[in-house]
Length: 80
Image 1 (cartoon, rainbow, N blue to C red):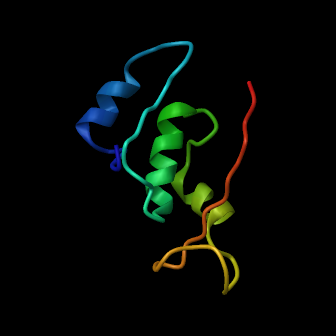
Image 2 (image 1 turned 180 degrees about the vertical axis):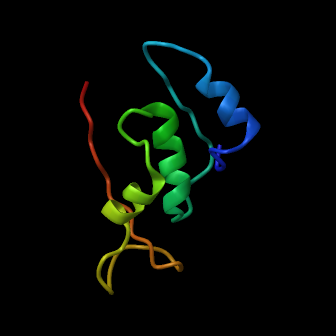
């Protein structure tokens, strides 16, 4: 699921359903695009653009938050 352009992602996008549940056994490992990929699978109408997501949640200042690549992650709560 790390690659939203992969065959598995395209096949999953064809399924129409009212709810989606994602179970993952691997950590995000401070990779902002991996987080976007998972959120895009769950809420494609909200997280539809990786570039915009990166601009919103990427590390905008030097210091705190983020991994070796300098990208910070933010926790966001969405209620239905």
